[in-house]
Length: 218
Image (cartoon, rainbow, N blue to C red):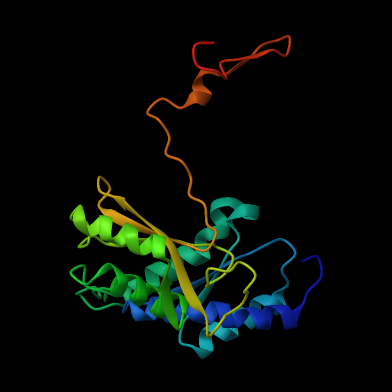
């Protein structure tokens, strides 16, 4: 935004607060890092600091994009100070689920605790996928969620901190080699895996503007 908008900033606090709650659910301390943009004002940064202070969370402004390493020192110092202030034994994370739980229970734990969903729905196709995962011996693996980054829900139009929603899982894939299963939600698309030799290394742009190497055997 080119102009300061305090109301928009404050509306976004609900989303930020949910993320802080999610970190707390794992039993770990947090530092609130503000990725500063050139147009951000001091008054807006103070609003963020006050938000963090009210919740017992240290806030650090990171201005690395504009100032390089010097702009990241505040964040580094804040993290180091927090680490130095911990007990001799570092806090151990609390995991959301036991891998021995069913795939449905593991997905539900993530959806309710991290995303704030009321419920989880598996499509008929996803249920068939889960049957296949079980047959292949993958039910005891951790879950990787594939979800839009634009919302805590699976609907990219639901901004802020949506409530009262059901997370829909439409597909479940087993990544046996990687050691996890992937639950795909909403309309999310996944990136294809790259070959050992990326095709881009075979592409050449010649001085006359011709491009070769786009097709195999070319």
